[in-house]
Image (cartoon, rainbow, N blue to C red; front, side):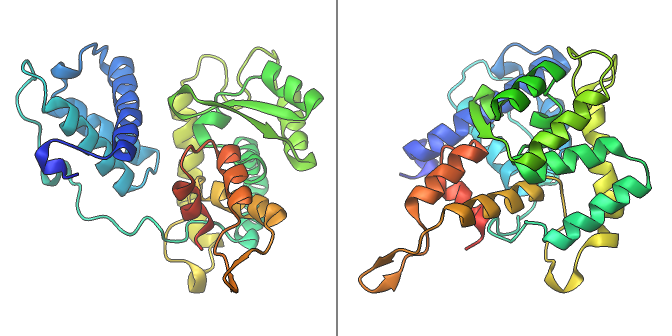
Length: 284
């Protein structure tokens, strides 16, 4: 169905709903805004800048704004027409299927840098992203109590995008990271990487900023088409988990591109409801 006719597919509708949850949470938190119809240009620009600070792909940001435009189309009391994409600085986006995963040697070099520069916060964050597949906001949401429970049970309860929860089995390396993080806490009720009385989003910015400043020192130029971000470590994690589960399958004498069972299991580990998103992580 054509969006120009005011209709979208069921898959797009579900994606738009998730985008709107992100936008409304941001507007409520930053502007105390309660009604979708009151969103104006300044809110949209602030949201786009916020997502860019998180190093969110431009394609994802465009999808979020498309969702906002779609829902506002049906509101009689909307606050005028929104600024267009060009006014926000949203231009054509690169192919989302580009390989964003870190190479193992890039990860090891960055890990070494965090230790040399005494950045334990960044070290713990990238190790959790690499060995548990966590998003940066999921990492900074963890507290000492949840971490200790996960170490004891071997399973980490993660609250991801849109409040969706998942259970992540912990490797020995992931358990070790949580142990080290807990040892640094004066109070187990505190968040692992967020000092008391400090804003979580500022901690996230510091972690992302460290990687942004130092990534050129570690990446393999001959193999790199996109910049390294902490999110790219989730891609590396996904590939490792998929490789553990993959079994060679064939159909009519030809090797299948994906093992469906392995793909479904990795999607669940990442907190994705759609397997096509996980295929992007695997870049196959």
